[in-house]
View 1: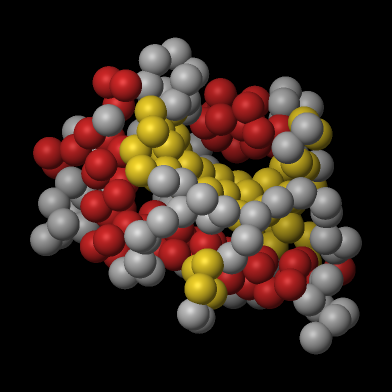
View 2 (view 1 turned 45 degrees about the horizontal axis):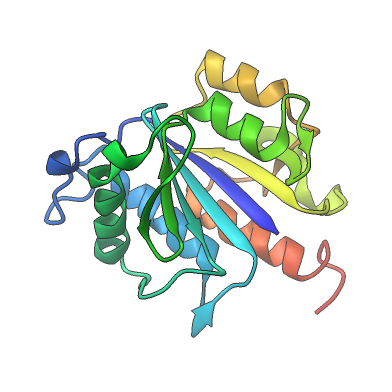
Length: 204
């Protein structure tokens, strides 16, 4: 299983504030939607064993599970509509129990700390994976050994806040950078997929 946690701190939690005619105006939801598409889609299909977790305003986490997704298309409008549906179902998320939005999509009342605890535990090495931070100051991806069941954490168009950086650092086994240039978060996900697909760029 590969998992990606994407922090979307400006995305509104009110579904009425998410306009499908102005997706960038909804707190750069367009970037988050591109991360979902980069995470779960192949050229003519859907990847197996991938989950994308969008942490919205540190209040809710919308999870897309590639193994159970149905009727999702890679365009931003389609993905944004699914995020809006998830926010519309937030009253059904009680405690840490998820609200079922549609096949393969869930919403939980969890911010970043709770989401990371659920995925990797307080020490970053939980039953579901090992936490890896993607960061411009990390070690080169090409020099690293691909971990089993990695959980990658990325920020949106903002840098990590001090609180977010501390939450990730407390749980991260390592910090990696995907290349010498700064990339959009969705592009970074594509590079990481290729790194994992090729077993650390050794098998083609």
